[in-house]
Length: 214
Image (tube, rainbow, N blue to C red; front, side, top):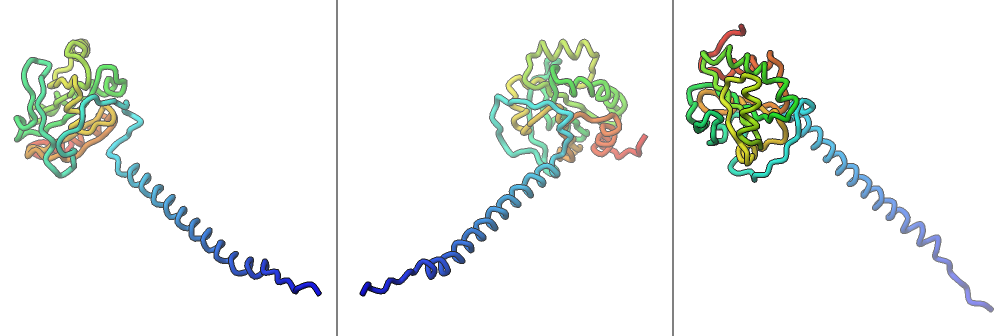
């Protein structure tokens, strides 16, 4: 008489299958949670950008960032650079005035497009305590001077051929604009070109004496 055989396949299947299903279900939940976290992070970054990056040109900085990154409500990072006029430009020298720092380059189309409006805004508000420091990024003095002379720009132009100032301000594209109040506090920053109306609105918020819209 053959020995009785016991087939435990069914017992094994019934006991193990729920466990495998549970593990797969848990793995799916974890993966879904991770994907959701990544999506939320991307949305938060996108919404938090102070910019219209479609109106800017990406830049590669050759210098390394140093010091604290710029932050609205904090003191704007100090800098010192050569001016196109042969002098030295230092941010802290302009305490008591509203300072508009704009990073640009002569090869940058959106920078070139907004320079006439920057010039007009400068002419309108310079007697009210506005200082514009247009930081030429990564170009030679001759390249910057040639462009400034051709376009008859009269605001202050600084030279940043090594991109050290750009790195301090953590640039990712140009034009990028920083608006500093008379106490030296960064009040706003914006990546990308500005309209004339936007320029005037932002400038009026940093002047030594608040102005009504003109």
